[in-house]
Image 1 (spheres, rainbow, N blue to C red):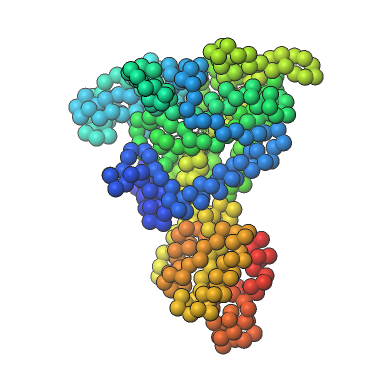
Image 2 (cartoon, rainbow, N blue to C red):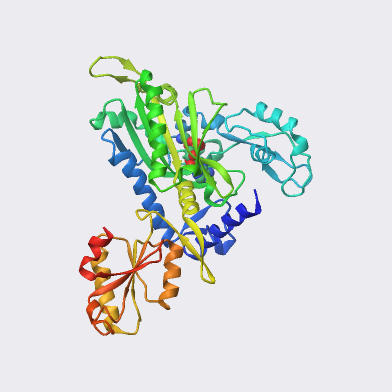
Length: 465
Ligand code: GAP
């Protein structure tokens, strides 16, 4: 990772804290590894990202419906899914300082690519072949134990009031899609969907990630936005390609530059995944997975049929053919999208003697869309007029009233939270300025061009729409 790239991540982390986007969890207790909280502007940005995803996936598709399944599920779900036996990362220990490290990450830093889906034996073979290149990030030694698979499921004692709950744990879900599979029949029986159709869900997922790094890129508690599309086996390949095209376009529509997106195809696949492509984004630490698009075959519904004893096959009402639908999955993290949107928006511009930091969010994602300023906070006529504009605009836009400090300072603050427009009510607005011809107008300042235009108050809504 070059210093320059590190630098950008550090600047984003610092801005996120300073302006109330992201805080480390439980910070007054020293933080809590790989867990983060969204602050006042972060929570708004996250909501807007969720909304954009929901619109693109559910509202824009007649045959995709939503779901909100519980975080806790019957423990057998995770046996059926393969997570209890096989959801793990390769962990090794430095023999000198006993630091535990993720072997695939160390290999990656040494320029050797270890696919997430490799077995323990395959990882160990790669690890031994490349030991000379791999150093402990803490003490710099090259002596490690063998890599062991470390299960990532997070356990809890929910519902267990006696005995040793660690022997029969309930899990916090490791991915949201399992809630979709176990509700496949419910949705089919209670709504008017017919294959092909999709079920979409946004919700928290939990993983005991070994290495906490790269800010909110890899969290232990995070949010997924997943869609499972159920198709006839013969349609799976073509439908998969359609979703690849749609999902790539979605990021362009979110304002991400084409040259900052990459396709990466997984070569070593778990047996039930037929094809897996990632959309990678150019994060400050390099191109990394943003979204996974998977052809999961009939594995999930077959496994849940087998473990639950409930037949999850589908009978085509027209042909009467009975089959287990195949699943095309699109899966992206909200937090990763958040970091991608932040990275894309983060801009430093030299203005005169100063450097201006500005988040150039697309207008639909900006936490605040219009900020309204009275020129001075101790002039009741200015404040009253600005308040009226605030009340008028809040019906259609996310607005903020800001009367703190001089207008220059307020512009800088709004630039740093990515507000596309600032409206200033001054003495001309209220007919007490020198130019009486512009009474009833306000200054609208554009975030990106910094240009200022006079707009009539009654035309403001139309102007912003
Ligand atoms: N249901 C498929 C699935 O969960 P995955 O590749 O493990 O596949 C899908 O995860 C997406 O979820 C990733 O592309 C990423 O955006 C997000 N994600 C996974 N682990 C994450 C973590 N620890 N922190 C933040 N986001 C994560």
